Amino acid sequence: MTGGLETEQAGGIDAPDFVVVDVETSCSQVSSICQIGIVGFKDGRETFAYETLLDPCDRFSSFNTRIHGITADHVMGAPTFADAHAIIAGHLSGRITVAHSLFDKGALAAACLIHQRDPIEATWLDSVRVAKRAWPDLPSHRLNVLTDFLGLPHKHHDALSDARAAGMVIVRAMEHTGMDLAGWLAPSNPPRAKAPIPSADGPLKGERIAILGQARNSALARQLADAGARIMASVGTTTTRLVISNDQPFGRFVTAHADYRRARELTIEIVSEDDAWRRID
Image (cartoon, rainbow, N blue to C red):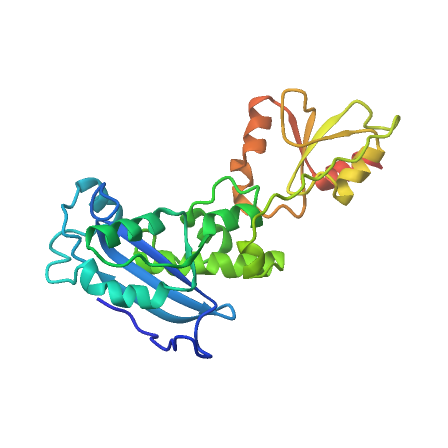
């Protein structure tokens, strides 16, 4: 089965800014690709989609089939990776190619080796790494968690749907941070935000406060420090209070955040940002 929107013109004005690939495998052999989905994006919009089942020339394990639902019967008569290599390489070679983790990169390299086809040379971008930088405090950066968080339609472990979703993660991350593709491709070692120095006196003197959903140098953090609180990087045994920012981006996932769970385990007081402001006033 192959999908449409085949409007791509290699090297032309319709060439995508980046492409996204996702594969499903039939067993524990990473080369056993039984489905592949590729989606192109330009200016934040999908420009083409390609999907096909593949005969992996390998066994199907019950474990893998339970994950994606593909069986040997489904791929009967489907092309092999060797048959589809030219199409796949045509979409990916020489381009910024996104995958959600580097599993797909490894699977393609292994399949090229097994099927004696030329390696696919691309500039790889891991959308897991992008998501962790864009939304560092999410409790998980699995694709199904991200699509739920971002409100994206998604059928998990369907190669085309996974590729489309991972591409939208990149689009949303660029919108959220203002960083372009070149910025995401550059190595990143962001400096850690420095906490403000607590005042020597104030209504919160002696408090050790962690803030969920804002940086340690945010306006709220500075206000709490001016009131005498020491701002913590995360919840620990010495933390006296966890403040939930009004701008926290986690929605209903906030209770699954590690700091929230840790505060509950340690019976640390959890308050809203509004409550924190009232205590300062």
